[in-house]
Each structure stands twice: as structure tokens, then as C-alpha cells.
Length: 123
Image (tube, rainbow, N blue to C red; front, side, top):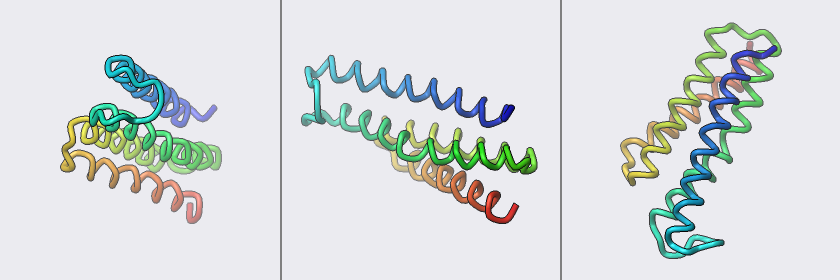
């Protein structure tokens, strides 16, 4: 049941593990067990992980509810695609410090939230 949400959630879980490993490896390299320190790379990794955790769960909830309510498949894949593309671009932008990547990534994430909310409210 809920194959689109399940697929998206599985991809998100793998992405979160990758983000978490990146944070852990950087923490080990710079010798910081807690907090940020002055290391810019560590700060970027922590924020990329935190930002992921802040947005992805709500989109997955919206996607799951929309799929449960049998929203059109194209709409479900639109929500999932916006989330995946948005998070990928945001991650790339944060990790490299390039706003031209992270800004459209946030737009994609906001789009996933809005399309998901609209699907539930009006679909």
C-alpha cells in the first residue's frame, strides 16, 4: 500500500543516512563531538542535515495522506519529484556554498509542500 510514498520515504531514509555520515565523518576529522566549532564545512553539513529533517517529514505526511485519499498518480509523483529534486539541489548548494543551487532547491521543497497541501485541501 502507498507505493509512491513508500518509495519516496525509502529514498529519503537513504539520503538522511548519507547526510548523517557526512556530518559524523567531518566531526571526527575536526575533533568536534558536539556543536559546530568554527569549521565552515561542518556547519554546512549540519545545516544540510537539519534542513532535511525540518522539511522532509511533513512532505512525506502530505504525500502519504494524498496517496491514501487516492489523489491522481501524476499529482503524487509531482510532490515526490519536487521533494527529491529540491532536496538534492539544496544539498548540493549547501555543501558547495553555491546559492544558485540551494535557492532552487528550496523552491522545489516549498513547491512539494504547497502542491501537497493543495492536493489535500482541494483534491
